[in-house]
Length: 95
Image (cartoon, rainbow, N blue to C red; front, side, top):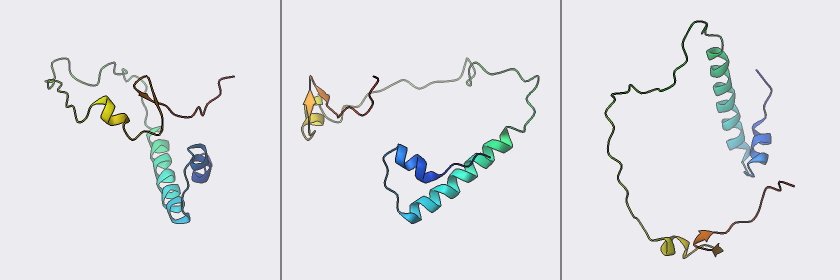
């Protein structure tokens, strides 16, 4: 199992974790990676990959939309907005 430190991941995600949070999340991450390692040991030779996880005749519900607030209401407390959208600082430089 690769040696992955939760504090490295938190730094990449710009998260400030307490020591207690980091300890708990490190334990969770190790458990998840351990489970994935166990799954990778399952022999899958000869198993046809699924292209669709649902049966073609599976019942689906109709989509419904709910309007909780208008776009103007959504942007009302935004620190910055432009052209009806939230404006956020650029964090990735694609050079």
